[in-house]
Length: 220
Image (tube, rainbow, N blue to C red; front, side):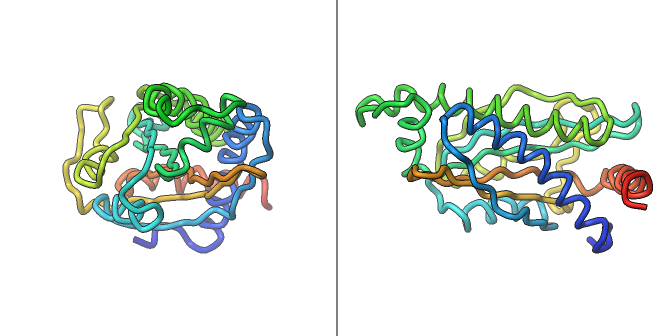
């Protein structure tokens, strides 16, 4: 899929970088540590390939919080998406230590990780998507984030983008998605992670129009 030209792709990455940056600032306040962000990566891939991409980054042992949402430009102009927070499972204990400001005993990690991860995902993913909505002057609707801590078998179904808010759901796994990813790390902490957002390709002409408007208004 070559919906966006190079200039539009660069603008899209920069706009998402702004929204990811807001989420990173939220995380920084939560853990009282500086958060470093990588340069955003831009991909187009099938729905099935998203799970493979995540596995290539983190293997099969991950802690993942996902939030389905959609940007609404008009009643008939919406873009379904999913925002994801990923942390390698072996680093979740380090993250909990940073979050609570004290060492969490190993035997307590499993008791607190789901609630802590879901709370973190709720704040970070909402910050990211609401910031994106503000940038594009759209409305936004979404589900509550949910925590996924399991093997690879159910990951593709978990990150499916079939829109639960709309009756016009698509089960076609060959549908192309745009995926943007930023990796992050906590300075002086042994923890890295990623923020991702996937947008459904069938609806992206709406986004292309918004990018064109943005470029005309701010880049000319």
